[in-house]
Length: 81
Image (cartoon, rainbow, N blue to C red; front, side, top):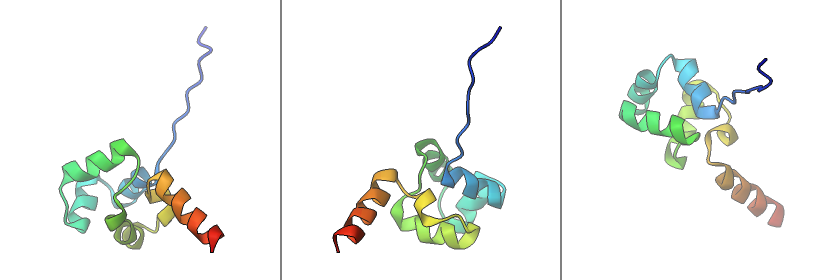
């Protein structure tokens, strides 16, 4: 009897790839290599310089596309103001 339950978490960058159809298609739209998009998928986030464009193309929220500690720093700076 298998008692191990696994869950799958979809990251923002995975959702973005899904919305456009493939890593290659997202790469084409961003004018980057498919290998770069593949790296982002493995990391679970996109580089900050590409986040706004990915959001514009896919509608995925910025916070879902960014590296988690980057979002945390942005929130911290807002609460300090």
